[in-house]
View 1 (cartoon, helix red, strand yellow):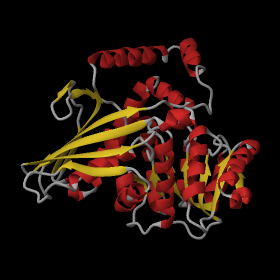
View 2 (tube, rainbow, N blue to C red):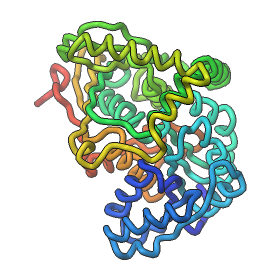
View 3 (tube, rainbow, N blue to C red):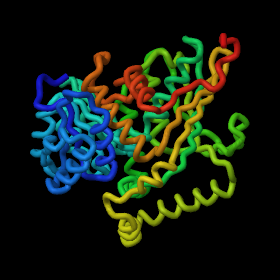
Length: 397
């Protein structure tokens, strides 16, 4: 871990939509005495965010602001060297994220972000994991809706089952909400880079150590009607299964043979078919320059759902875990998944790294392997629920 720095935590990208929500969450929930700052490339926009925060807490009228540009390695290096933890919302990360990750790895500074881009995460492992191990930096990607509910939820489920037995966990996600321009752009760019992402994933698999004496898998599920939920289970090709698998590979409590499958839970079959057509069309259009520019121009940076829309949004992730002849059903649930809750998850992850007594670890880590119990406790206190719906058969009630 880095030595004494000017700041405990810096929020990079504070003037963006999700960055602003994260700043507001910190304004309400950061403990007294936390030394934190806002960072971004536009001082005027940062000042506007700080003015909003001062309306929450007048003491924040003097909150420090740091100018740094993701395209300027010198500026992000200076930022990383001044703080113990950086939290970043600046995406699409495949385009803008690497200079800050590299700077944190070199400086021994802990780093968290909200990326859901598998290609970016794999590239950062290949290029910066070893340096972060050397300096003691913890690089923790996917600390938003991708992938904290799924990573911590699968771990929570495993802990309800017997130890030292083969375990299978299926995750089923449902959510209601709208997305911002940043999420829209990241998703479209990912659609246009499937071949690049596959190549980087193969390169990572070739060099990443595998657990000894154990088997860990994230396998594609099959489209089917789920008897547990009474809904259609649609295989979901997001980053979440990869994150869960990496946590399982690092932690012995997942057992000698662990398997995870990841689904969207959908009530109506026409909804499934419409989504498949829309995603397929978007993926095809993103491969063509003119249509790619048209799609990316549909939403401008900084746009997102209104407070009223966010207040009506929600998510639920159900898990079905089986091991040792027992089955358990659990649930992780909360409010607006893409923004309010993602801001909460990112802020609490950064606070966890900055303030909590965590086990020694370094390099690229998952939320579970970096923070585990401490983060679960923080998110529970913050209003995200982790609960057992049906305990394993034979478990005392």
